[in-house]
Image (cartoon, rainbow, N blue to C red; front, side, top):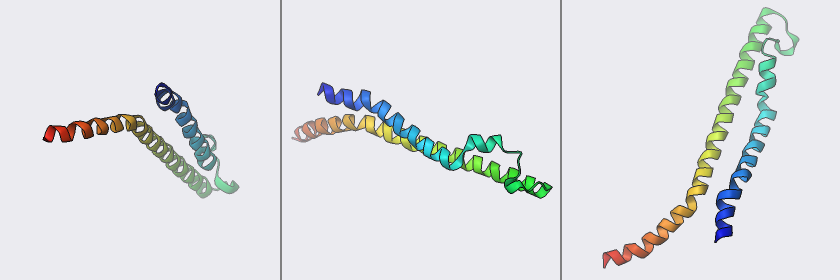
Length: 107
C-alpha cells in the first residue's frame, strides 16, 4: 500500500510535469510565440510596403494570441486532470466507507 501511495502521489508529479512540458514543446513547434514576437516588426513574405508591414504585424499578433490561448488551455486541462488524479483515491476510499456505513445506517 505504501508503494502505491508513493507511486500515486510522489512519482506522478514529475511524470505529469514531463507530459505537460512535452505538450508545450509541441505547441511551441506550431505557434513559436517567442520567434513570432522577435519578428513582429518584419513583414510577412518580404513585402516591405506599408500594407505588407501592417498585415504582418496583425497576423503575428493574432498568432501570438491564439498560441497564448492554446498554452493556457493546455495548462488548464492538465491541471484539472492532475487534480482529479490526486483526488481519485480519496473518492474511492470515501465511496467504500460510504458503501459500508450507508446501508448499516438505514437499518
